[in-house]
Length: 163
Image 1: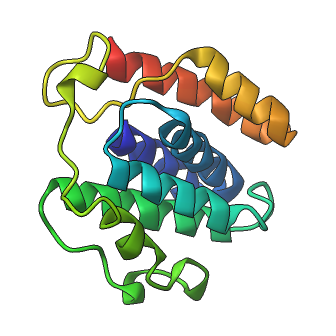
Image 2: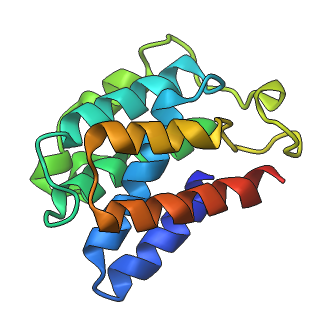
């Protein structure tokens, strides 16, 4: 799910649609935050990233995209048994020790939990959650049309990653 999100986000960013990239990243990070299956460290990164991005407007500011990107990179590195990426890979808005602290908060490297995936292949990094969770989260946050469009894309990406 994260890899697909990054692929879609990078495409949007490269086409100068940075608000779409940020909205796609936000959707996935909130999905991970609200899901019931991720490892504790993974969920801690999602909580830290969404909290850190909260002061920014994802529809007009590039900072949330960078914060979420650092969170995703930290999660993927943990699964690959690599250290968190260095501050120098990101702008100052995504800097600090938050990602490394969060991923290590559980005391162990996250492991893929194949029982947490519904219909996904064993070993998949997919995160499960009901589609209404996405809608509820975005309704509560009052997201704009851009985020709503990205939400639809995220639900579609989620469905593809699970089935």
